[in-house]
Image (cartoon, rainbow, N blue to C red):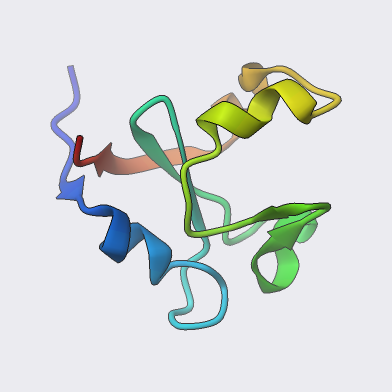
Length: 79
């Protein structure tokens, strides 16, 4: 099993496409790098914002959580 770096919600929030170059989102405690996705340009994807945990919001999406399989997992969200 891969060892992940643990990041706080504050550290995740800085990867919002505005404050740092990386664009990250979290889902079920895992942080994904969506920087290269054209759908996350400027840190926004429809009504969702990068730099936060999207676990509660996935129910509103037209896709399933399998969408995260396309992205590299870069860390774990501190609980």
